[in-house]
Length: 179
Ligand SMILES: CC(C)(COP(=O)(O)OP(=O)(O)OC[C@H]1O[C@@H](n2cnc3c(N)ncnc32)[C@H](O)[C@@H]1OP(=O)(O)O)[C@@H](O)C(=O)NCCC(=O)NCCS
Image (cartoon, rainbow, N blue to C red):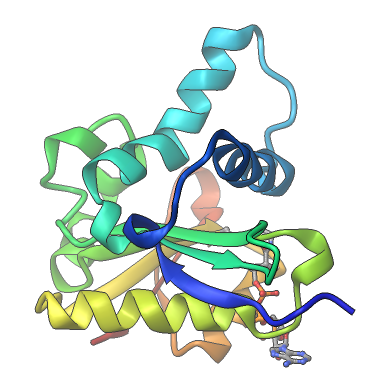
């Protein structure tokens, strides 16, 4: 049995190369995109969905750590309206969802290592992010996922409901909750 898992602020964790590799491993394992044209494309993908949040919004990043220090899950996010913030201008669906992001500006990306799923860790990471976003006076939070994704039930259980659709044939689902 693994020991208890703690949720820590990213800024409070001693980020050894080992810890960074563990975060990256969870990111790539959890992503739907598995193959990249080259290393530059792989690095750009990491930057888009993980790296820039750690650099620009470290106050809103949390790590789940096992008793031996191993990172077994993470959550990154931001509270600025991503349809207005220049740094998210590369994500086209935010422009489409600008009416909704005004009301629910905070957003997040959460991933848990497969062996540690269904133990409440994702929910605990979410609670910490929600508390931090509320403390920073964000009025609402959203996530964008895909139609039929298994994570929709996780978000529903955490208080998110579908507010809008976007993308080609409405395949992107905008789920949100007030704070
Ligand atoms: C989505 C994800 C982050 C959820 O993380 P998690 O740690 O498994 O989340 P939780 O354990 O809090 O909740 C998952 C399920 O476990 C159940 N659960 C929660 N605590 C539990 C416990 N102590 N014992 C047993 N089951 C539990 C919940 O009922 C929940 O069920 P639901 O998904 O049907 O609502 C994780 O599954 C994951 O990384 N998935 C792949 C990547 C992904 O989809 N990320 C989101 C990108 S948009």
